Length: 383
Ligand code: PMP
Ligand code: GLN
Image 1 (tube, rainbow, N blue to C red):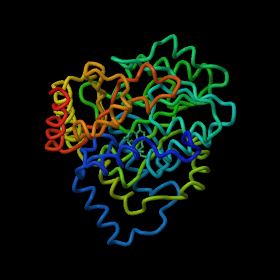
Image 2: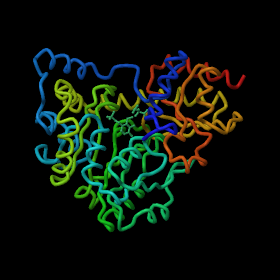
Image 3: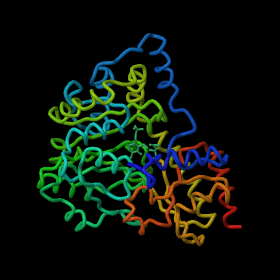
Image 4: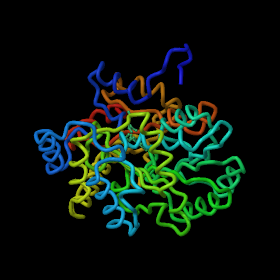
């Protein structure tokens, strides 16, 4: 977790947000919205603070939020979840991931993820003492090769960590890939941990929670977060659902990480989870329109653009513009065009970076006017 000079390295998101701040460039690097989410959700948090919901909440989360999570799993996916024994509220999806891996992974255990992978996965596997095994998703379709996926599983596989819709590629993993994962996890007795924080932010392809597939729920920890759906990334309210024995083990770790978190935000997220279907559909439709806006700007600027199925991000290839090192390109981009992006190489292991060298991830979870401004600025690259 240290940089080459032995000093703790900031994450690429912190680094690129600092670059945007110091240059005044438009920040399409770190994925956070620049507009607030549903007013009902925000008002509920304000009300909770005023009503005195300001002390430690219960260890597993408030009964109301755990019930709202269980209702949500039933309403959207037909999953039966016991709010008392099968739900844990966490400090964002990040703490859910950390507590899960620390609870399950012992030194020598293998954890499989796809690659590129969200940066915390690699760091958390190392913190848990595990061995990180990756299965590549390669441009332009970002789907795994089935034989490579099968070959990744061994008797030492403890966890297969899935992320769909996927950060950074935006890929929604097809059901046949998910079915193969369930088959292999069952054969090798591995736990499936699935990070579905972008579950409601899909554009065309529907999201299938892996826990809905036959044989999966009994070995799956499903993780999500209010941050993405309700544009409240700073609240850090996440949750996981899993069979009781897994929730018990993960709760044991969570109680010594943060103990509890986010008292007044928990009732507000419960309000959010109970909003009508149309509100969720509206959030996804607005994001899809923003994706179109940025993707067409990137295409006009000369990038090859890969189509995401969902999430906050689009991947663009700088090669047609004559660049082959996206990290160097991203460091130059504020001066070239007044925009910040993140090199996809930040989501892969250094020895695997070659295949992703020219790719940049841009976030489109921004106001339309900001995306229009960014598109105009990026057109300068072409001039
Ligand atoms: N997983 C993925 C795939 C993400 O993109 C993010 C947010 N960037 C997280 C987890 C972290 O979520 P939270 O902010 O709820 O901890
Ligand atoms: N998940 C966000 C992203 O991928 C950033 C979160 C963070 O900064 N750790 O950009």
